[in-house]
Every structure is written in structure tokens, then in C-alpha cells.
Length: 168
Image (cartoon, rainbow, N blue to C red):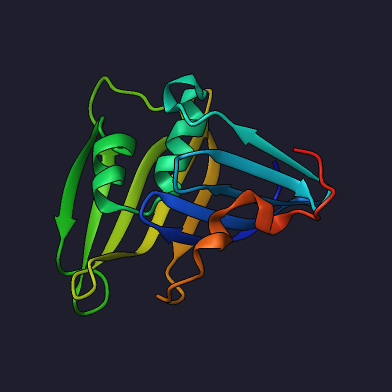
């Protein structure tokens, strides 16, 4: 809960994020083998099994969102949504896709979404999510592409964020 700001890096299904949520700071990521991890400090890391079926549905959805992959977003996150492309909105070379819940459907995290796709680079340039919890509005989360650059593969590994004597 509370205001948050994060920097998210993705590479395929791998991601890592440096997060500030209220007064808390976290590093969160997914390794190449699909292992999800959280580091609340440099002294402690939490690693979750590489089995999405064992994760709570909301956590699995957040992982799919963090992949920033159009197919994952459409097929896994927005499966119960009607999608409408609006070519007249957004910057040149970008397509805006509005996602609204299909009649009779609900979603554990979202009431609607907006994807802005950069057609030249085939990347999500902006993603806006209207969040819900227990049917009540919980604000919006906006992802904005800042740069496209390759990061070293170890940036997606839990060990990168921990001291050598850290507890996992």
C-alpha cells in the first residue's frame, strides 16, 4: 500500500525491479529458469519455486505483467478483456490498445488497461493498469519505456542483490 516507484528491466520472461513502496525498498526478479525472487535487503533473499501453478494467481499475473511481452499480456493477463485498437491516439508509429472487461467477467487485479505499442520496435512503450482489489478501485499503475538497452544477464539473478553472507 502507498505510493510507489519502480524501475523495471526485462529480457524475455526474465525481469528485475528496484522498487520503493511507501517506506520499503525491494528488489524483485525472475531468473532465466523462471525462479521468482524478492530481496528486502542485501542480507536476505527469498526464492520461490520455479512452478507458476504453485504461486498465488495474483503473483503469477504480476509476473506476466512484468514480462512486458505483448503476447503474455494479451493471452495471460487480459484474457477476459475485450481489446480495441485505436490508431488515432498515441505518438506516430504507435498503436494504442484499450482493454475493458468482457460482460460477466471479473479480474483479481484489473478493471481495465491501456497498452501503447511501438510498432517500429515491437515493444510496449506504455502500459496503464487500472487496479482493483475485492471489486474496489485501487488506483492506477503506469509503466513507461525509458530506454532499450541490454543489461548483463546476472542483473536478473538474486545473488546480484545480496551480500556474500546473505541468508536465502
